[in-house]
Length: 389
Image (cartoon, rainbow, N blue to C red; front, top):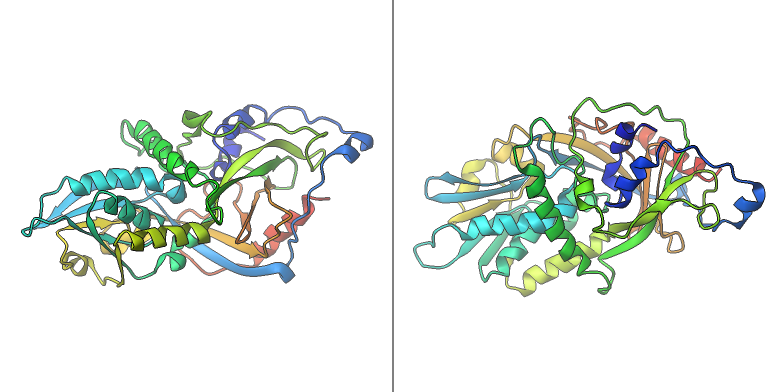
């Protein structure tokens, strides 16, 4: 597979392993004898059929060609801090972007009572981590959202470390963006790593296998998506070439390594509990337009509305990137991930995530539909079953 084509699926690759994997993509596959194949480690196959299908969810990721917007804007006596446009990297970059948004918010003047009061709009992972980071500075924070965390688009995420997934276009990102992105990624990674081993495992690593073969016709993306993962080489445990004596999928496995995964349901529960324990208030509220948002009593508003910012804050630069996830019943004895023939599978504690990711990163670009497509589900499940043949 051509290196450019493999970039299309970077959103589920492990940083450090992904970069080294690309150099091995064109290697000639080894021929495995039946005797060698018989010695390989077996895995429990994913039960990829409709009898085990829990639900199908669709999410429109908020892609911004210039990269996430993190800046202050004045509206009369109100200061608005924008923190939106993270594409498919919201979970991965959340804490680093929250720290920068908090610094911008705290740089604004005191209100007339001399107190620091902030409104955060949006209860997805960007809004919740930003609200928590503000609380950690001693601020008074009220989070307003039409959809609470478990109802947000963030709850429909794939749930893997993917810090440069649909993060920006090379010809649109400003000078210095890569270095700024690296800071967000490293700071966020440190916060994620600190959660390993906590009750209910909000963060954990599982083995992932990149398989060769399949029927998909890969093609280069028509847009210059930035791929910055090599800047983080060595941050996570290294990947390696698959070994037929150690790995399953003999004759198909190309690369393997540990991938960071987010137990989204438990992670959200933990963040929500911490927000409330630290004194934060969460109010269910929608906004018809920008004036309604600006009518809030807090003098500083942090806009973390994701794709919702397009309508409320005139963020016409945002582009929807559609992603459909098929959720299978959890399989405690099948705790691994794989990428095969354009389909990503991640076994999480809250279910097995099966997603058709397409022939390149143009897949889903500009598609605002959140209606599940049965044909896409059937295609993805059939591809997973073929991986074990």
